[in-house]
Image (cartoon, rainbow, N blue to C red):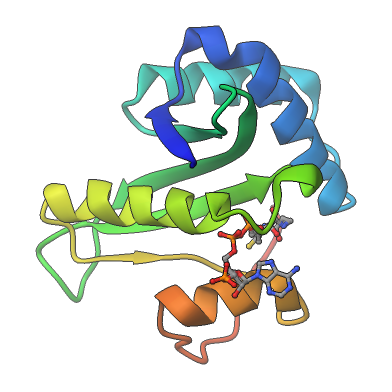
Amino acid sequence: MTSIQRITESDLDEWTVLWRDYIVFYESEVPDEVSRDTFRRIVADEELHGAIARDDDGRATGIVHWLTHPGTWSRADYCYLEDLFVAPTSRGAGAGRALIAHVRDWAAARGLDKVYWLTQEGNATARALYDSVATHTGFTHYEISL
Ligand SMILES: CC(C)(COP(=O)(O)OP(=O)(O)OC[C@H]1O[C@@H](n2cnc3c(N)ncnc32)[C@H](O)[C@@H]1OP(=O)(O)O)[C@@H](O)C(=O)NCCC(=O)NCCS
């Protein structure tokens, strides 16, 4: 059974392992000082929010991070789920589904308009989960790096 809690200061070591593996999954790099600041902002629980999943033995198995922002199509804010990761050895046990449900419940409790997120088209594993809990909008993502 997966339990989900808000990320707090004492989660730093386990969060760091999961965060680093998530960045490796995306074959990317984030400077250590940025990671440290990201964790600090998540723990502050103001502009960034985060939750950690634990298994029956209390081991951290996954993380999710999200933020909110205003929108033009609704008076209520939107909730953007930015990062979702479950450790490879813990996958398929419902942690990913539970982490998304946690964000959905958090946003619903605050009267937000919607929860949304992006994924890579070819991420079949993640999309199998997403197709069962959300609507695929068909939008294509563009960005300009600055
Ligand atoms: C995507 C991810 C978060 C899913 O986490 P998870 O804990 O394994 O997911 P769950 O156990 O909650 O699985 C929920 C559903 O996803 C699907 N699913 C999960 N793993 C799957 C797999 N290996 N193959 C096919 N479907 C899979 C199933 O439909 C499953 O439903 P079921 O348990 O009723 O059969 C995890 O695979 C992960 O961290 N991947 C690497 C990082 C990533 O892709 N993050 C998302 C970025 S947008």
